[in-house]
Each structure stands twice: as C-alpha cells, then as structure tokens.
Length: 140
Image (cartoon, rainbow, N blue to C red):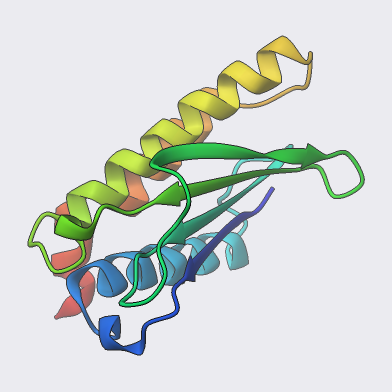
C-alpha cells in the first residue's frame, strides 16, 4: 500500500550529488503515486539507502532485508550504496536496479510466508517510477 524511501548518511557533502538526486526523485514520485492511489495494495515496502561517508560507512555490502512487521504490514530493506556510485552519472540506473531487486526479494519473502503481494503491479510501478524518460519529463 505504501513505498517508503529514505537516505541514511553521516555526510552532508553528498547533498545534491547524483545519488542524492536519484533517491530524492524516486521518493518524491513515490509520494505522488501514493497520493493518487496508484501504489499496489497489500504490504508496504520500506527501503533505506545507506550512503558511505567520510567517517562512517555501512557495516555490510549489497542489500539486506531488515524484517517484516505484521502490525504495519511493512517489509524493510537496507542497501549499502557503493562509494563509486555516489557521484556517478549511473546513480539513477543504480537506484532503479536496487528497486527492482527489492520487488524480487519481496516477492520471494511474501511467497514463502503466504502473504498476498501483487508482484506484477509492483514491478510495473517501479518501472514507471524509475524510467529515465520520466526524470527528463519532470525535470523540465
């Protein structure tokens, strides 16, 4: 029913970096889709992008599932963003791939736990939220 996107970083130097812009764009458009009732029903997804900073970095690489709360029907994910992506022109593509992975991992989790999850609707939603032409159209 909802998609929550957040950034966890100890460094303010990444404000307005390509990764910050890509994640912020995704979060803003997810909020618009939610407001218009276009997000899939069922469980919510909560994704935190963990950015390495000058003095602190995530203690893992890749993505990890943070658990599922039945009360809020939310599945949590954290993804450790590699340092080379932070200021890369590929940051937008990286965010899109992460979100596609989130949906696939959510599909597996919910299938194994017999929880209804509209995988096809989520795939389409993420595709629409992360396609490059959407970013270009909205930016102008």
